[in-house]
Length: 309
Image (cartoon, rainbow, N blue to C red; front, side):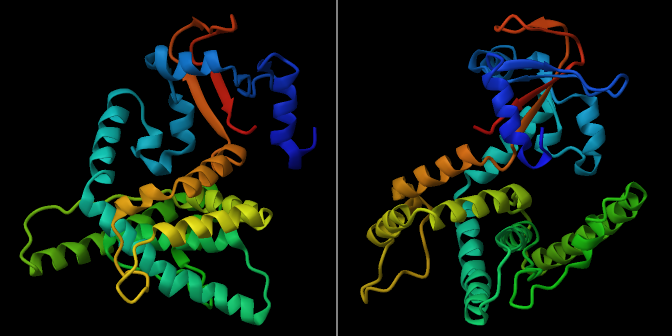
């Protein structure tokens, strides 16, 4: 096995083991797990017998910094978080704000950066650029403030640098810094709302910075390798984007207009199928069970579902 092709190696093992195999780690390492891509097993765990499969205590311990966000919780708390998130994401006000924030960051952040690097003939790290892009737009949606981490000089954000040290003893300090920064933004937003005389909470939400950045990076790489697909997407956008009387693209965009971009949606979905931003799904059995493939799982045993093809 070669580390740089771990996903390909996993796919090869699955192809040679009827889509499911048991991985045994070193003794007492806690790395034993069942790996499966069998559709019947996946449907059983994620739908038919959903309540018996959660993320497990070890997953929460590893990702404790995320507290009780939706991808870190199970059962009723997960259901309530999902319902709340759906209410926010489907709200027309949030959809308009999301489109407006994204469009503004495209015009004032992403395009100037691309132009600058192209003129200077410099190499551009797409994943870093898209990570900054999604970080800025997420912060605008959450706090109403733009940290402008995406700009021509590509500044290093202190918070991001501290959070990325990867040393366990530093994580507590980083956690405190993170909450201090959040408290500053929340305080500023509350004061803004108070001054405007608004006494209700506006919908807000947050996006996954790293997964979106990864998805966009792979998507544009695939387009760079497929000029025909790029041309079709451009044609679809030019055909369906609303124009003003002068023929110019409108400064505002109804989110529903995006539903017309059928080829664009298809290309994006296919890109994420081939190169999923999160390559594995993790599950943990609550009680002993037998999967449709007849593989037995014990209580608290780990199950990995690779999403790569």
